[in-house]
Length: 54
Image (cartoon, rainbow, N blue to C red; front, side, top):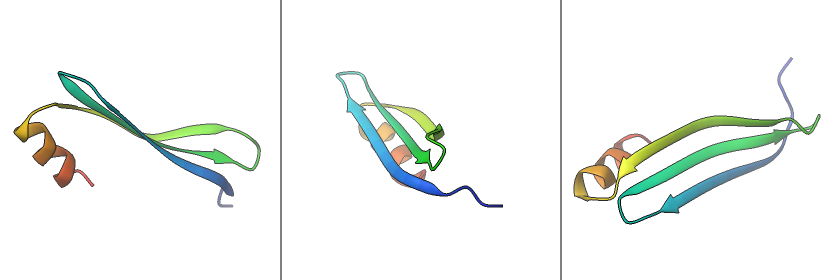
């Protein structure tokens, strides 16, 4: 049986040296599940990697 998703969220944290991203959701049972977390350098190469990873 598929899990019912109540809410979805995306978090992005930009800092001087890196970009952190997190994708998650909240289930009907109020469980928080993080589907993807990743870190990319805050430079041109990192932005390209972020764009490719979607």
